[in-house]
Amino acid sequence: MRTLVRRTLVALAALASTALPGPGGEGLAPTPPMGWNSWNKFGCNVSEQLIKDAADAMVASGMKDAGYRYVVIDDCWQVSRDASGRIVADPERFPSGMKALADSVHAKGLKFGLYSDAGTMTCAKRPGSKGYEALDARTYAEWGVDYLKYDWCHTEGQDTRDSYGKMSRALRAAGRPIVFSICEWGSTKPWLWAQGVGDLWRATGDIQDCWDCGKSWGGMGVVHIIDTMADLHPFSGPGGWNDPDMLEVGNGGLTAAENRAHFSFWCLFSAPLMAGNDLRAMTPEVRDILTNREVIAVDQDPLGMQGRKVWDDGPREVWMKPLADGSRAVILFNRGTANGGNAMGQVSVGAGATLMLRAYDERANGNQYFPYRNLLVWQDATPAPSSTYAQPIIQLNGGGSVNISGTVYAPGAKVLMGGGSGGSGGNVNLMIQFIVWDLEMSGNSTFHYYYSDADFTRPKDYGLVE
Image: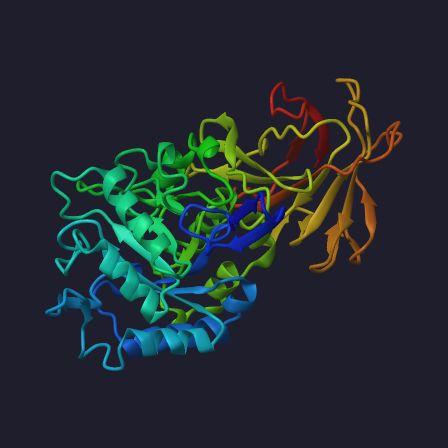
């Protein structure tokens, strides 16, 4: 929020007035927006009742409590303009009107969003906002809109900076804080110019409900979006976010493991989390993914840094995101079709680190059973000689017991693994959070954990769990 201060020489007093936050300022999106959008599941089949049901389901499912706030109607809600040029909602599908619908959403403690387009028509050939930016912005403000997704169809001859700048200024002047979501599909590299214009900008093509696929018109599978986002980490942060598009979790085209990896990467990217499934009919598995507060906390971390790839060994990768408390969130990612094998990856966190293992799947591996929320603590504060191993400790942090070689340990217990004297120093407070584990390890796999310097280079194998 910006504060305008005027000083008068006569009174020698400071008069301060507070302006409403506008698009592109940290006041509207200090952390990535979270909510739901109708398009991925319903396309043009939107209605007043659907939006009310989605809002009800967001509350009842626990999504609101997990941080989701925006209920956004995508394309096809609008049908025409009246004699004065005001945009008209479909009277059959939205008989109570948009203001009444926004009031209903607000009454549940949620926020209301709409869609428009910078061109003459929307992507579904409904009326666009070109030439009507100021009027549309005032109309949205009168209706109680809190979020605007602004698309880029039917924009022949237009310049993205000019067109999005016009709507950004119109929203600022409309008298209501409205999050501005720029959606030009990354075509003109908005991460280089949209800071201060919008609160988030699409950095990729449209997501498809599939893992490794593509469309000739630019649609992208999840793994292709992950790769597109890899080099954009310098261009995202509080008040302006790279947007890899809405979530496909729960729409049927991804396996359970792919859904978890999809959601985890979006959180590692500090991406807006806009669910795109049918909230009324979520399975418990889908609900648990979308409301996983530990993973959401990584997305909403106030430092706001986008994660990046720090290690690549063909199909096996390590991705890392720095967090505000000095810890790191890490994804161990196997993009291949084979089991992960023996070496899970090299993770550099500095000497004497605390590694937190966040395994979504409870996996049995021989006599070792690692449940959700284990802590793996390396006891050495200094690197061990290359010929020996530092003595690792597994500390349970809730989520059930662990069975190691026939001995069951309760939550809170510390379990020494391997030999050695236990190291020469104490623990330090650097923590890594493994927020997904989809390596499909085989039954006799050996787990190797690596760390070295804080820049994730020159990895060394300092620990072994067999």
